[in-house]
Length: 295
Image (cartoon, rainbow, N blue to C red):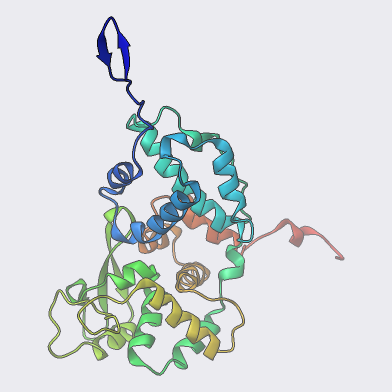
């Protein structure tokens, strides 16, 4: 305290800025659990990296150092992590809790398009299915490939989302990004694989694919991806195959078979046709190289 004209004055300590917990809670609100499953570990790691700074004290130097700490990863992975951080910082600025959106000043390098490297021939995927003897695991791979759904959508599938269309085939309704639902027809082989694993006492709200604990919890999306990875290893594939590769395979093979691009967009749940058009460049139907002679 200090004195002025005999009166005691309390010297105020200026606030250090907004608190991490409060901003993160506001930023989380309304986001689907599948998104938070990916985002929150990144934010927790970033917060630990910045300690003891508060979110309003983060500078461009700090952001650049954090990006550099991931230099051992692929550029696309780095960009996903940094996009999550930039999302949080941008949100904090928009609601007025930090004065400057430092994330906007961070320039990210463009990631090379490695989509072509993640597309397996259809015969390899069929081999993965054939060599998977556990009925539940085979049904997972069939569904990921046959319906083109994400691992998170597969994890969230309940029996009430599965409906028979005829004696031979059916449909599934999945909850995708942005809490948007879409309904996808599935083949009779995939439908039969699903019905074969349905317990006699299954309730409509029960998950189709249960966790190992057996307590009616849905299987974790990471476990779903590991099932695909293990199937690829059994098939003798050397690539680091994940569940998302089945989705890439679905889009490319359907396109090769003549499926309209707009239909593939709807099946995959892409918000923009531009995202779906990436698959056009993987197996081009035409090229100027065909006009050259003698080479």
